[in-house]
Length: 135
Image 1 (tube, helix red, strand yellow):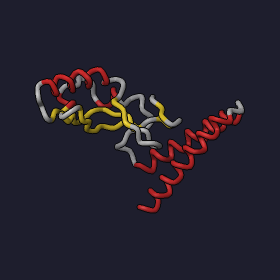
Image 2 (cartoon, rainbow, N blue to C red; image 1 turned 135 degrees about the vertical axis):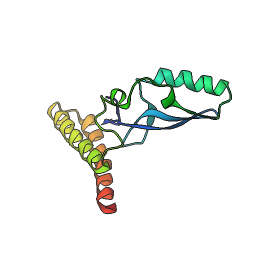
Image 3 (cartoon, helix red, strand yellow; image 1 turned 45 degrees about the vertical axis):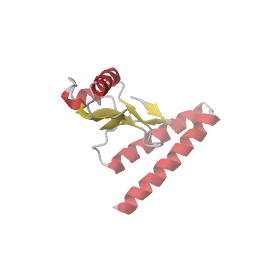
């Protein structure tokens, strides 16, 4: 499980550009708060090798899925949420985790962590309201 902004990151697949080469179906981790994206740590080394070789060969597009041996379940097995889930469910689980952590932060009297969690809760609450409004 990976964290960013105090939130657990969501597993997804996407396209990354490495110089002039687009690499499709790369397993990624996405922060639901700040939207930072990083290559999933389980395939990061393979991605770097494939992207470098593809770029060196002058390939403009390549599908990472053609070269990876692990299935999605194995790669994203440690993620709390994956992007295929209902967005409202993802937001609600992020809020629930933040509330649990907020209780811990208050218990140990960590004011800085409390403040960060409250900011995260505010972002996720606004996102939840937007999702309800758009339904």
